[in-house]
Length: 594
Image (cartoon, rainbow, N blue to C red; front, side, top):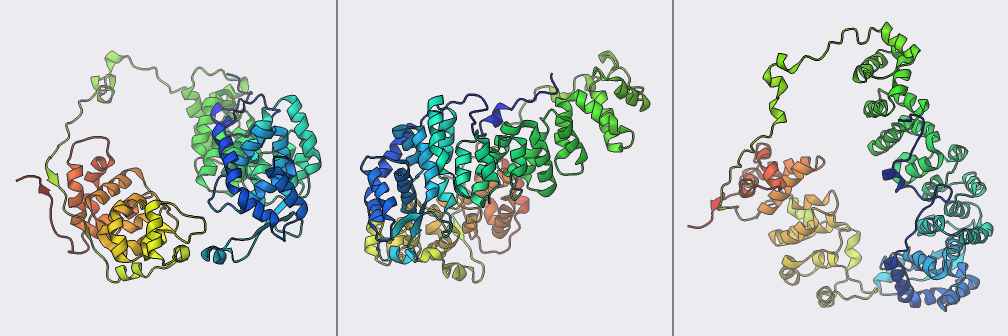
């Protein structure tokens, strides 16, 4: 194996943004996204016309947007439409599909110019838009030129540019040259320069021009993915870490290769974030340089470094022997690693200076030959763990039924949950017959002041209670708040709906199940206990809260037919954690039938 050649692992390559100067790439148009982008244009046509006709809109930009909608495309017109669509996107449609549509309909050079032109456009949104929405009034948007006196909307501007980059990397020479000519005049301070550099990172002058400017927070990731040389990487601001993001880390690695090592060393010294460290160490462990190996060796006292160093020693055995030997005389830790490395690689050919260190340390002198099998006891020759074992038959008790679900509240807890208020209070008006009809039909106009969560939390009890059994909540926004109101108001009737959303919404939403004990919740908690370390504390608290009642709920599943289910595996471990805190739960497990 060549210990001096670096080949980017294929598993990492797929996360790196493609570059035209890093080999050929393939671009496959997304037909579904193209169709969605075309449909979105038709859907928003009326509201876009209203934006362009608003008196405060800049008429030059508004006319460009209208012209595009009429079928006379220009890059600035497409940019105006895309930015206006983002501002008017009440239904949260994926506006990046418009970029897919540009590429398919107008070509990649047009799409590159249109994407870069988005930096020239600013969308203004009328203040107090929430009040207008609540009154079924249209929220006013208008379009103006982007100037230094207006807050930039970098996060809007960058939508869809990654698709342009991928398409351009695979474009023909003629298309690439056309895109370069179109992008030439579209630079400018801040996001304009950064956007142009990201779209065409082969223009190193554009990249360095962007890096020398003020890199906004939203733009930093794209600038990292534009880096093409070690000099570019040195100019990249240190306000963020490339190791935080897969695309950034692997794009930089693909661009600068082994020169990434010093940057990763700095990040290892600055951050303790586990995912960053794991990614940075994995990269350093495959870099075929003395610098990368030494970085690991110098940081053996840091978390996770030793495993990465052992991986590097296995991948680069000659380099490991040479660099460990250089420290073995004075560093006890390096000496131990050196000795273990040579004993683990007895056939390794060592240069003279390394062999001299090994001889000085007397490595191998006490190594004895392996004993023949007939001299060893049978237990060592044929240990039991190497033979297949007969699987023990699980004990199954059939015909068990769990007790009925129950709910128990701590003093004042139900009243506290029922009194919860939040931002979601204003999501639904009090026209309950209208809201019921909207819920049943699923049809609503964008101006309807209706939202399922507000309807179920605040609606009349006699109207809501019959709907709970079949209710499948549409959204989990603020569920940890309005869910408490629903549980406090409807008790066990709310259980089916809460089971559909609480386990899968937010990390804190599982709390909505805390006052209820049922067989399905017990099975859920057993599964969380087995699968999720982060969920064990709440699981143990829930079992402790409900005590024996919780255990009785779990017994039928734990003693039922064996399988891969986590409740069967987790059930036996949980009863010891369940210490009853109250005597409010009654009833035991019973058998089915007479």
